[in-house]
Image 1 (cartoon, rainbow, N blue to C red):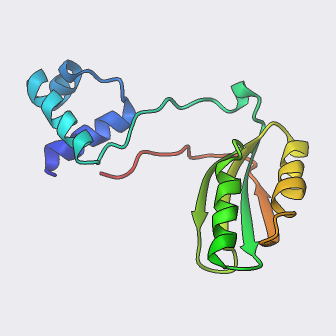
Image 2 (cartoon, helix red, strand yellow; image 1 turned 120 degrees about the vertical axis):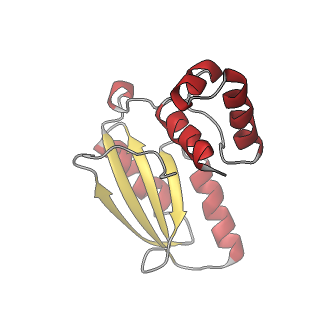
Length: 150
């Protein structure tokens, strides 16, 4: 990957709708060169896909929270069952395995506090491999999710 590829990735993170012509103009490349480079970056796995960013508040998702989960057991079957549970929950938009006291960190969007409460008390805590759950409700996100540094 060279400097031009890096600039392409930066530009596409800001606007994934850029045509080969617009990308070429931005980078002083011909549209065919820009298009070929973009296709190569996609084929090589640098670009995983394209998605629209939605406004959570317009969708009625008024509560964003980070939920830390500590497991009671680290048996492979328990982890697999927990992963399946999380994969099935639409309000969990991302999940990470961590080091430290918490085993998992979940980023969730819920309609309201009652929905967050139900997720924690009716879904997460009753799971047999979950020992403890701690949540932090987001008051304000002053820096939106940013593009990756390229």
